Every structure is written in structure tokens, then in C-alpha cells.
Length: 290
Image (tube, rainbow, N blue to C red):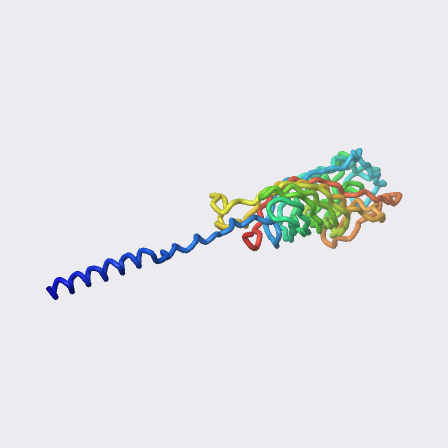
């Protein structure tokens, strides 16, 4: 009898405890962690390289230029009679352009919004290598160590660079922009001819243009950094490099000393700007993925 009472009491206590436990509040699972999707921004420093094609953008069409040499001129070897040197009028300004750029952009509102920036670049160019072709009166040849150079043609250009502002609008990873600012360049009044290299001629001016740029997503197969930091662009620029007035009557130089050999009769003064356009493609790495 006592044993039955004990078993009954134990069963009742167990049932009561189970019922009480069932009434207790359950421990809920923790809420999921919300991870916001990063919004791309063009803000940040970048650096890259570019390559393209440059060509003459001026409206000038120079005609042939004739230099008359007196009888017995020390510039030529031939009969003791007057002779002529005839320079062609073609500027022959076109060729490869390539170099690098660095810059900084600031986007006012990430995602889509206005973008401002500044960029500097330095470019190699291959211009006007055939500019100094000439014809000499039959029976005459240049004297030893003498090279004839075109006194009115456009100078060749070895390199140029720009420092420009940029203003554009971005739709997420696509940026359309305009650009403009300071330009500089250096070349030679006498392009390579017979081993002679003319004096450098540094000049400054301005440039303007525009382009479109696209930032690759991290999973793009073209994104070799595997980060949202690689951009591709296509850009066009017009460059105008002013030249100062100066005496330009030199039409022959000594290929050994580099000194002018003679001045053409009647010193010619000019102030012709060097105008050309550049169409190029480039790639940049933007520091900071977003």
C-alpha cells in the first residue's frame, strides 16, 4: 500500500513538472545578421596606362617652300650656278601615342551622381617623321655634314602631357565625363635626318575632350585583380600647343656640331600652334574597392 502511494506521488510530481516546463517561454533563434550590399563609388585615387592614335587637327595646308641658293653656295656640291631647295608642304602629323595617367575622383552620391576629379598624364608620340623631304636642283647634292630642314613646317613632337580637370555623371559603374586643362609638349624643329637631331622645343597650351569609363564587377573574367577596382575607358582629346614668335630662317644645319649653317634670305617670323587630336583607350586601377 505504501509502495503504491509512493509510485503515485512520484508520477504526479513528474507530470506536474513536465506541465510546468511546457508553460515556460521557448528560447528563440537569434535574428539573421543583415549585411548591406556595398554601393560602388568612383571616389578615390587611381593610376593606369593608355594607348591610341594621334593625328593632325589643324586647318593649315602649307604649300611648297623654295629656298634659292646663290652660285658657289657652300651648302651644296655641284656646278657653279644658282640652285634651289624645294620643301614639300605636307605636315605628316600622325602616329602612335601611348603613356600613363594618375588621378583622383570624388563622387557626391555613391551609386549614381555627379563626379569631379583631376588627372595628369604623360604621353609618347611619333609624329612627322617625313616632314623634311626636299628636292634639290638636279646636278647638286648637299655638302658634307649638311642637312636641310624645313623652316616653315610643323615641328615633330616627341612627347606631351596634360593636367586636366574632369566633370561627369555616373550611373553606378558607368561614368561619362568631359575634361580640359593645361597641356605641354617637347619636340624638335628638325626631325631626324641623316643622323642629325635638332634642338628641343618646349611649348605649352591647352586641351579639351571627353570620354566614357566603366568599372568592372569583381566577378568579371576581365578583372584580373578580382576586385571592384579595375576600370576601362575610351577617350578623345584635342591638344593645342602654342609656339612663340621667333626667327625661323634656318633651313640647313651642320650634322656634326648642330649649329645653323645659314639663314634663308628674309627672316621668317611665325606663331603657328601645333594642333592635334588623340583617340585612345586606357585601363586604370582604383585604390579602394568601393
